[in-house]
Length: 103
Image (cartoon, rainbow, N blue to C red):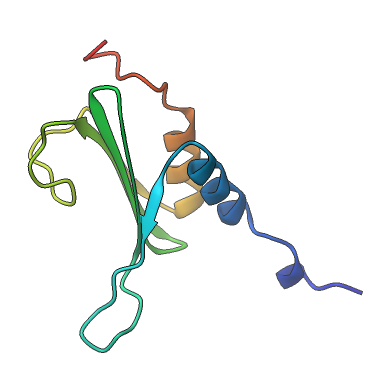
């Protein structure tokens, strides 16, 4: 018999799909060496997509212009979502590759 922990979660599948689309992931750590977040970044066309996962219930994703100076705390973005990881990742995966505002 297999337990539910033997099966990849929906979030895991979504993260794999982001990797397949070109996202690169970082795993920043706090001063104690503990994982602070999982951060994914993908630059494409004239935009940068960033997702930060702190917990299963706390994720944020943004799409911003490629010339944004601070991608972790942008002053400009064309799309932003915050909430449970599965919902945020689902919406991020549904975004078109090109930002309609820059196309």
